[in-house]
Length: 155
Image (tube, rainbow, N blue to C red; front, side, top):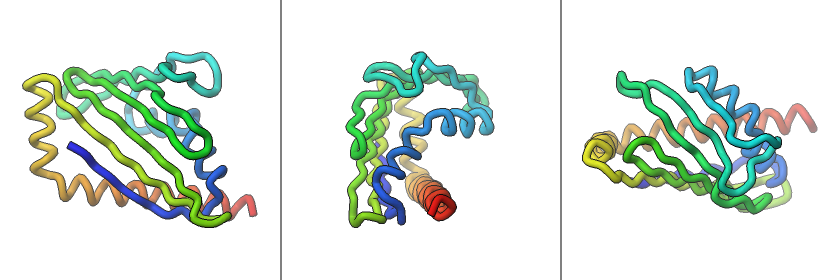
């Protein structure tokens, strides 16, 4: 299953990329949502192949996930892979400068089930595809507005 979203952000590409790679802030957001996140790297920025381990509760069960940075091309591309049980994920984020103060963010999130239970989970997501797409796009739009408000405070 694949979920895609595109959002235009009224901010320079460098600022948008800096916000997307502010991993400390993203980790704090995850902790506020009840996700226990641990880094597998010691520097401020992970190297290719390094990432995070996460523990969270989903559909009444404790789950764990491993997320790794696969590609990092500043300030245009970020790609992450993840694995949780029998589910493998791939997240590809591409930034395209539309003008000096406007950036398009293209995000593609893919899920590939590798076990029967993961296939059942993905099938249930497919049945709820339209509501998942709406929530995904709404959250991405809100994130873009948050970035824009930070840029407005700086200017």
